[in-house]
Image 1 (spheres, rainbow, N blue to C red):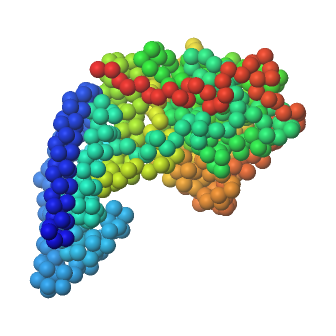
Image 2: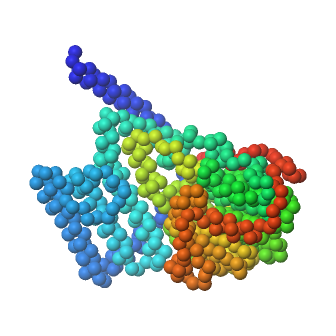
Image 3: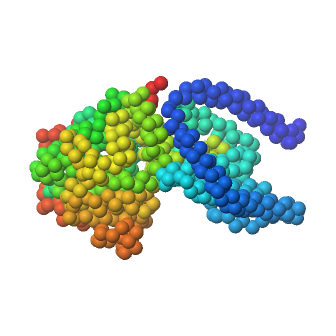
Amino acid sequence: MTTNDVDAGQSRARMEANLTKIEELQQRLVAALTKKQQIPASLNGPEATLYAKAGQSYWQEAMQNPAKLIEQQVQYWGQTMQHFAEAQKAFASGKMAAPENTGPKDRRFANPLWNTNPYFNFIKQQYQINGEAIRKAVESIEDLDATEKRRLRYFAQQITDMLAPTNFFATNPDALERAIQTDGESLVKGLENLVADVEANQGELIVRLVDETAFEVGGNIATAEGKVVYRNRMMELIQYSPTTEKVHEIPIVLFPPWINKFYILDLKEKNSMIRWIVDQGYTLFVVSWINPDEAYSDVGLEDYIEEGYLTAFNIAREICGTEQVNAVGYCIAGTTLSLTLSLLKKRKQKVVKSATFFTTLTDFSDQGEFTPFLQNDFIDGIEEEIDNKGMLSSFIMARTFSFLRSNDLIYGPAIKSYMMGETPPAFDLLYWNGDGANLPGKMTMQYLRGLCQRNEFSNGTFELFGETLSLKDVDVPLMSIATETDHIAAARDVYRGVQQMGSRSKTFVLGESGHIAGIVNPPSKVKYGHFLNDDLSADFDSWRNAATQHEGSWWPQWGAWLKKRSGKQVTARAPGDSTYKALAPAPGTYVQIKAVKQKQ
């Protein structure tokens, strides 16, 4: 028997084993898909009326101005035919050289074959021509209001992204090369990854972004030393252990968003904001929110304020023996901190000396990239889901956020996992991103209807606790940090809200990067800079043009600002040494609760 015979026999054996495995995986996949839960149809896309309006408007325009439609069609078909002719010429030359690519740079097409191979080059360029034609068609529609136009633009781009040739095995050179190199093993591994993801998510296809076995909360992430000193149904309050002999008299109480877990601020030692704050000589309290289930359906913003914010302020003041605290709110927790400060103003209670807001929206008059998801059809679907389940599942929120960056958070990871057969990376930030939380039903609708849709806080008409709360009542000294590329809380929208706050001492900082990296930006890295400008009287673009750029993190700038408002030096306070004894070591127990799966 020759070596070739042996190799052929081994190849046949591998193929038979793979076919057996594929058959088994297909059966598992079918079984997993039967468990898929039903969600309101409007959460899967816009009402058909949006496309009907767009189509009607497009054809009305064509009837009234046929030359415009003809021009668009001629341009598209002209580009297509020229592209086809150039590809034919390349094939006929026998040199297999692709024509010059004049399209935009796109990292999805990083493989050299997209530029050098006529087949792949033709597919890529035709995709780019088609995508540009769709964009021009959308932009040419004139009889839609601004909101409908924005939604149509978003969903058209989603369709374009979904149909990218990289998303299909036969037109993805990376996947084809990997399949050849591994004798098809990469495809079997990819199918295993696909089946595992569907099984893990009750029939829903959610791409696993990270190797979840690589991290342990309290083990190799969220390891800053501290103690849980208070617990109620809404939160655990963590007091962190001091690292200096003396601390500033006035403590800091930090409220993270309850859409995710607080340990984004303590992923690892070298980029931990929690450690950095403690090292600057502050007594730091951090709220760790409960991950709610259906039993929390009637919990509203007033419960977060009463049992979260106000309670945390009181506990911190009692432990530290002070009249006031410095408060920090991140994202939705910053929005709710603003509501709390307005309430305290109404009640004539001065328990907060200063407030710091991280990427915090308070004026929702421009809904930005969330416009497609803040219209009645989508919100009605969320309300229907809440009526059925009592809460908004983390799955729905995660999917919504993912579609804002679909190439990075859906299609790219799916290609690597399902086509290439790769194991997801061990990346702490993505682990945190996937460790989501559910939202109570009542709170969700208060936020979406009252704040996002009706913009009642900015308009001075938002009611809680029998009071009418207004943005102008936020009158404590404040610093607000926005980030340049934030797709959740756009800097110009954050700035507009800060302008309306009633404080006579306002500082606005624009950090480089985005919603997470722009905030978790330790000074040691000197990676992202920031912009400062004391004049907040003009619009955002004017502020930005006149701002001074500074290298490195904004943390030291904040530290210097906070120091002036933190009182004298006192002996450091150890957690558990007051009447509030330690209940558990940091990071506590609430942070360990995973998002509850929805029931059928």
